[in-house]
Length: 301
View 1 (tube, helix red, strand yellow):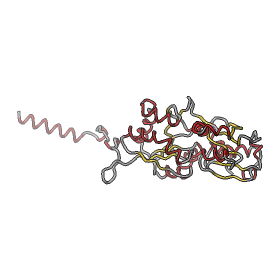
View 2: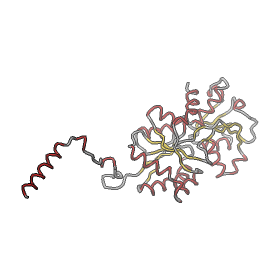
View 3: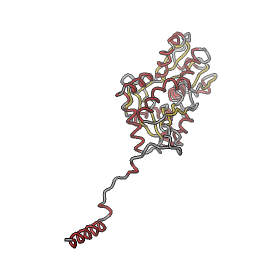
View 4: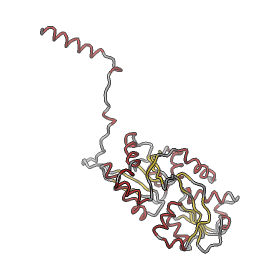
């Protein structure tokens, strides 16, 4: 009996050694990454950047509940990383210095086309994932179109902005002119809310701003409706998205995307969405931004 047991054991070991490598099935534990730790075993914060569509003070206040939500569902601290320009925010993404970012549509297009910036999700507002460029002037202005702003002072938002720079430049170029020749003077405000107040205070004769920010600004300060008016609305553009660096690992990408797509299913998530005026986050494809591409590349000299 002992001989039979030993013989069986030997045959089993031989069979195991002869099994080809392809026949082995195993679980790669490397695919199940733990939350990253610092050298002192503290959890590494999730770094989030929000492009300066609105001023830094407004960004911090508006997005705080969303940051709190992400910290809660991901079980890690969240740090907001802010930069003055869209280009600086894009560089944070390119260099992997932030985990995800909320960016302008043209910043996404240029980031995608130059270094592979990836879409993660997009907000939905009142059932739609689109927004507009609004051409605004002082309430008492006689201007009714871009053509009437020739020789005037114009406020651009950011050099990389679609609604605040590319689209109004496109309107001027459709008149057969160049912005630096058409306007008497231009300047950058580096946020849409500051462009709105530049027009409201008389510092600029006109500006083009993000429709979502415009609506948000009027909800916070109803008196603005007595100081400014809209004289032109662009066609619909795909809404500014949430993006990640192409260096983010697939599992981390899936975790972050799921956290955004399921926000509307929890009380904390809905509260965060309401603070931003969003219904929920949805999947969006790169092709949705082709109209933005057309405007951007039409204005590149």
